[in-house]
Length: 329
Image (cartoon, rainbow, N blue to C red; front, side):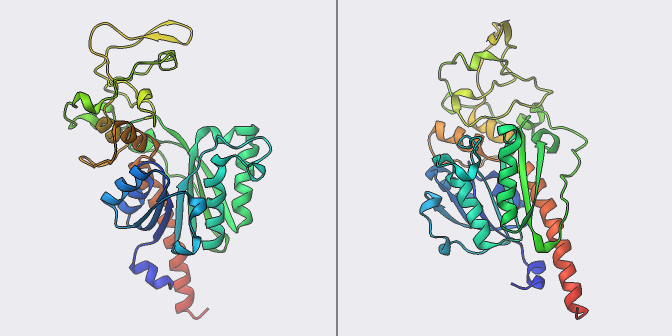
């Protein structure tokens, strides 16, 4: 594909997505074309197919022939960090590192203009920083300048505190020597604004499992004029709706529910709204699966910020190539 073609058409994306594909949706909303996507969760794949026109492949990435994956301008995804040890990710046989290994391999083989790897905040301090350094080195060895960015989704139009690391990589021949996240938005979106148009949920749309000692070890409720706590992937750990009475601390790592009202978790629809998925979006699967897909996803509005910034950088590079070609350089 020639640079002029890229300016006339959208940039293409291959995605090793997680959850309901919030990262992909954010990129699509910014004009990117999601051409191929993969996840090991069958329900997540089915959900993705409902809103995208991409080829969505359900299965273990280690068993997928990379020759069947189209080349793209950008590769996106996330990978678990639980399997990384102090020995460094390249020396680990932990199965949870499979996605990381194949993410690096896919980037090496397809050589996209850019990649986006999302992870939890803790990856920055894991192994006193040696893990993130090793990850950056692995991608750097494949020909990329890598820029880790720690951001809070609440600063970018998402009504929840959700700290995440985005590792943004640009192929070295693009000569992009720095990448910084845009400044936080001037205003935060509150729970009142996010949930204003969400109908009262049916009891079948709310997890009603018992509350564990882990759940009761800290406050789980935020008020209407605040942002939510992080939306989790486990239905039993879903945080409380602001209509619930305030929790009361009764000891170290021990709280109890208030008595002046009805305590309930967020419904899956409310969790989806807080993750900034569009209203009335359909999620495939049972209640537990819906919570999981929603909680594992990158918030759509945060993904849009990432996609917009990457597009700006790629446009500058492509326009520079076009100018040189027209000047006969």
